[in-house]
Image 1 (cartoon, rainbow, N blue to C red):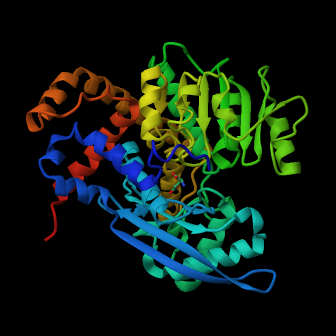
Image 2 (image 1 turned 90 degrees about the vertical axis):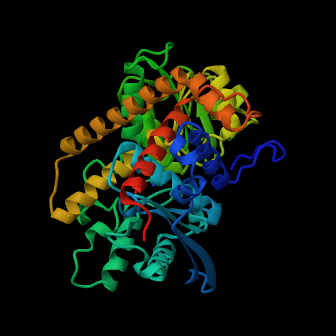
Image 3 (image 1 turned 30 degrees about the horizontal axis):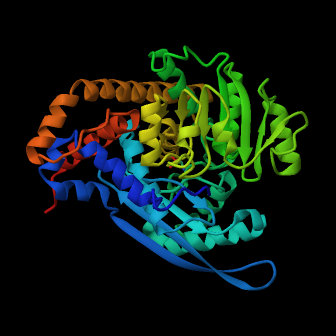
Length: 452
Ligand code: GLU
């Protein structure tokens, strides 16, 4: 992971999630008069931490640490992926879970938020070792997950195969039930939904396309001919490169954990995919220039798609970003300090809770199909996804306009409470998205009331 100057920036993802949340509170007076209510909306409902003894292929037992955070069930059951990565810890999973709650509220699906992870390096594990870690994790979580309570899905370094193991393990523990809705992102042969595999990237594309249609970026009228750089070549990044290229954009740079490749004349994405499958990396494709890790973010392009991990665009490199629009296919790729720099530079950031919501949207459609024993056609799923992404994009754009128009009013309210309050920054798209999402959660909390 890229690091920034720790003196300048706090890179704890959960602190960052709280800063983003707090930025929205200035526009939500109902929450500022009752700060406890804001705390309730931000704090996770439940944190489960488990130690997993797993025998690896060398015959030795290794103890892995797994986490499942149920952030909120205010608007529906918890929903969110399981990631396998060496950086996984409680703070990261808490942030990822909070972002899931906000994402589901923003795109308006009846789910809360959750997230899970196991600290491990999947690049050093065989598939059989990965399956044993998965099964032990799911067994240890027991009824902390369930079709109506908390529903996992894929995330970084987990995929449809991992979800099949999740399903199988849970199903062994709950014989006789329809357990398909306990997990989404399953293989098509096992209750998966058409369209789920490429859903995150497809959602990013629908959001970006609609943002440009709405006139969001004066420099760009559409995806055709736009130059694109993609950081990360996992599920989100790889599909984004393929789909943006199929939509007429020119992908000039891509990267993975080993480095990046650049061709200002445009990469042939299908050749990059073949090279990645054959060699394990995008690096080394003939006719391309090698980029060091992180350099992919700084190539001149119209659209930059961070599709890897948190804290990639920070105070240390935001100044060197040359894109017009950033489409956050990853969760948490941009820090608050970087956001301020990008905002000043006039770079538009389609925030993660909007831009990567396609994954959980199609997860929702998979869950509905599983509950009803239905199978929908891919075109039905994609059409539903497109409409939801467009509506959410419109909501964010409209809210941003309203926040900017109301700037003087909000500043005055703030100063009345605290005469020393600093000048509020001009609301960016992330703040607008948070105002919509936190506002929706706050409205639900008011309707439900606080029990008892
Ligand atoms: N892991 C994905 C995300 O961060 C998908 C979650 C889901 O489908 O539940 O949004």
